[in-house]
Image (cartoon, rainbow, N blue to C red; front, side, top):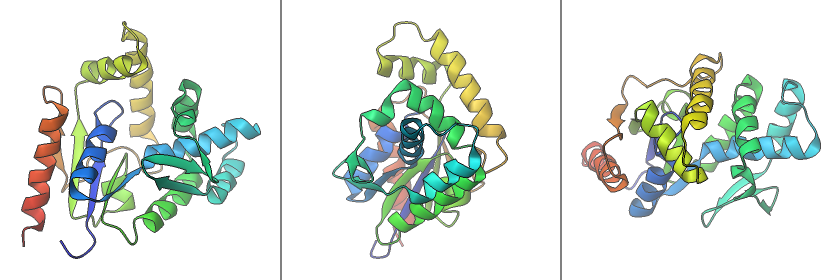
Length: 217
């Protein structure tokens, strides 16, 4: 694998993309790029500066100005470590709204391509295999049942009842799948992986087998 290799992992919230993508990147020595964290960083900046979530022009300007870096497993926004801050519930909700705007997505798309331009990378998100890197050598659409995805997300948040999480996730799925700009969809040449009954290690191994198969020549 002497040339740059891009592994695109798409899928809905709670499917396990971040954990698996991070593990695959570690195992291969690739750069891990969490595109969701990039939208969260823009949303965090918007919340801090008082920009309304229904102001696409100013949100696009913010996205164009944002300097986002991934360093040693941390997320930096304009030089500040925001790894924990971008995981706060209000930032998650804002990020889903920010990501629906075409101007924001185009700005982030260019930044994602720039970051991966000189590195073999594992990039995860909603539109990596369809829009950001349609030429990626390995594409995976990672999914799980709605109930399992809600259970996982509730466990992450330390909640015993996943009902409210399931409702919020349903709204987010609908927003992601029906937005005009780069909706969540499986690329025709992506490998579908249902992680509902798989451990994280099993999913990682399945993707690594796919990588070996696609790059063995």
